[in-house]
Length: 181
Image (cartoon, rainbow, N blue to C red; front, side, top):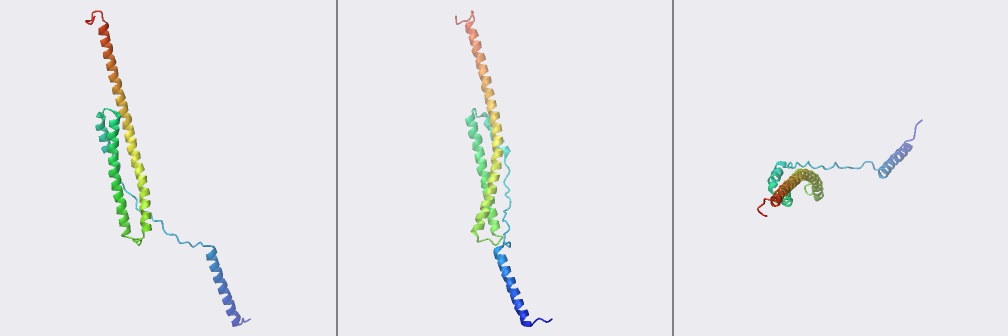
């Protein structure tokens, strides 16, 4: 049986139109073909390690402070100086990384990308700062407790010596052959 050519043309047009309509509706109503960009992950920061030896040197030198407030001001002052220096170097690293990234990709003039990159690096910096601060605080608190124990022991031994001297003087004054009588 032969199908007339005009009927074939009509069927082809209707099938083509139906297919186009269904494809259009499918993509409109069910958008699975989303375009996702790859996440932009900056290079990892490589901060300088915590300089335990430098802080230990200040702690050792502060043992002659004489009281806890002087010890605290010396040790915490050194910690603040070290932290400022360390953060400055980390900020330089962040700036350098942003400059390097801008010279090697297509986002050179995109301020949104620059802000995103800076924010990601600042988040990474905060984590590094927390780690640094934790290490420094643990070292300081451990040595502060040692210093307090040392000072307490020193005060107790001085008090014992003073008590012993006072007892000896009292015994001398209470002796019957004492020159004071």
